[in-house]
Image 1: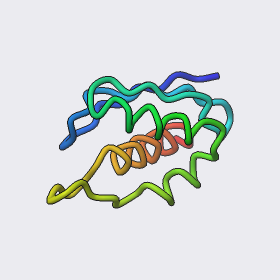
Image 2 (image 1 turned 90 degrees about the horizontal axis):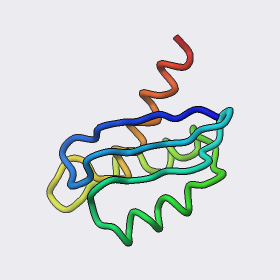
Image 3 (image 1 turned 135 degrees about the horizontal axis):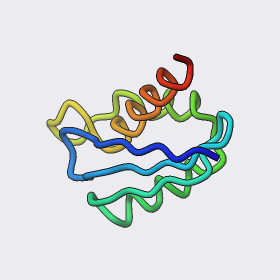
Image 4 (image 1 turned 180 degrees about the vertical axis):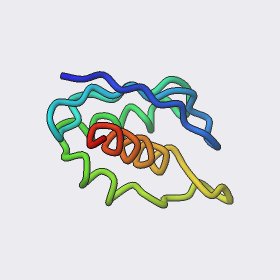
Length: 86
């Protein structure tokens, strides 16, 4: 199992801490942000394939912002996949 940390931008959340095994998300902890909503999102993502999460969450906006916590999760996972394949 690998731990991956990501600092999101443009959102209230300050840090994402992923536990990843193979191509599956085992856990996601979010520091900051909308606590209840992000606990719910984290729970839903457990066991999901990384590429499926990216497809579902990428380009979701929060109000007038060009990003959101779900979008930042997708971006974090894209960054993870890029670094794992390098």
